[in-house]
Every structure is written in structure tokens, then in C-alpha cells.
Image 1 (cartoon, rainbow, N blue to C red):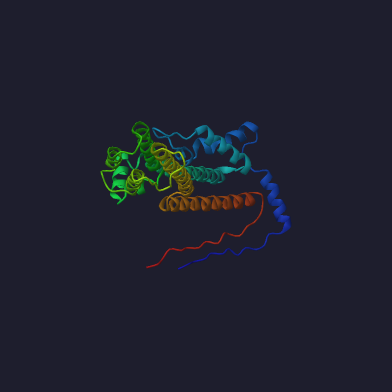
Image 2: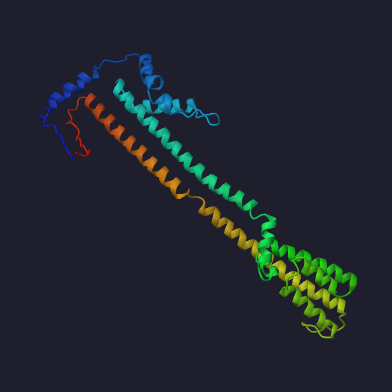
Length: 306
């Protein structure tokens, strides 16, 4: 149920308003500059909320000097007089300080999300887990070629095979078995392709066709160079794709998590409403002090009755 109280007052004449303003100009209070300065600082020295608002934990200290400087700027701008107006300004400053803290909390949540994600991606998966994931595929070489680190490993192994060909002159069965053993001896398309090239070379014909004057060793090295170049190209394509994905993840992390964002936004709305309410009350008091006759504010009781 809602109950409203509206004050019905007789309008004040312009002559009476002028007289009220003249009387307000004679208002009691500090007259000297020193007295006014002391009065303006009363809220900082004695305000109930001012002393409590600063966080002074073991690892985080909010600046009392910065808070008092902010307090002075608000007092100089709003020019409160009397305990009630000083209390309202004190609450406005406190709410403003807490609003700044809410913005810092939002920035902190975003930083934690970005840094935490970066840390998790740097340490996960572990090399052992990554290796197990590759081996879980039917063709480990195919799975490896879909990542930059996997393609780099394949390039290194093919270069080792190329060094062996430079020594032996051809791809030997022993070299192929060693390459297959690197992925647990599982059948792979890469090993099968290399074996097919070796057999075709033995029968006098190659997959690419012989080049005039080429020896088996030269043909084999040329074949391996082409395969190494292909995996190098895959590696750099994977690097570009992984960097794009990382940039997208970082952009997505620029928003806090939904629960944190909801909590921060509700807190900010509460503080903004408090600032607006206190400013309205302060303006009303100061207008009345200047001689204006204002009706009583509308009061709405939203409490439920049994």
C-alpha cells in the first residue's frame, strides 16, 4: 500500500522571499576565512562515513590524502553549511569513492580473466597430455599437422630423415621404422607415402616422375624437400590461425564473468541512486536556506501491510 503526504501551503509573496533571503545572508556561522576552512573540514575530521570508507588491509591501502583531496574539492564546490548539509556532502563523497572502487573492481576482474586465461593456455595442455591426444587419433601425423607445434615436430623428423638419406643415399627400412616408432609404431599416411616412394624408386619409377640426370639420392632429397616445405607452410598457417584465436579469446575476456558483472552493475546503480538522492536533498536544503519556501517532498511508503 502507498501513503502520500502533500503539504498544502499558502504561496509566499515575492516580498517575503526577498526578506527571507536577506535574513539568510545574515546566517550565523563562521565569518573568518580560518573559521570557514575549519567548518569545511569538519566532515573529513568527524564524518561518520569518511573514516570508515578507506580500505586499509595488509596488502591494499587506499590513499587517505587522495580521499581528503577529493573531499575538499566537493566541499569547495557544494559549499555546505551546518551539520545536515555536511553529512549529505560526506555521503556524496563516500558514494563517489565507492563508485570509483567499483570501476577498479571491474578492471581487476577483467585483468584476472585475461591473465588467468593466458596462464592456463601457457601451461595446458602439458607436453605429455598433448602427446597422448595426438596418439589417440587414428593417424597421429594428421593430428599433429593441425597445430603449429605438431607441424614443427614433423619438420624436424623429416629433416632427420633427410640427413639419413644424405648418408645412405636412399630411404631405408630402418629409417622408416624409426620414424613410425616416434608415434608408437601406428600406421600413418606419411610413413605409407614415404614407403611407397621408396618402393617406386626401387622399381625404377617415382611418384613425381624421374628428372633427366637425377640419381635416386637426388630424387629422394628433392621429394623430402617438397614434403618439408609443405609442413613448413602448414606450420605458419597454424601459427596465424592460433594467433587469431588467441586475439579473439582476449577480446572476449574484456568483459567480466556474468555473475561478477551483474554484481558490479547492481552496486554501481545503487551508488548512483544514492548520489542523486543526496544531491537532491542538499539542493533542497540550500534553496530553503537561501529564502525559498518549498513544499514538503512527496513521501511514498512502499512497505506491505499484513
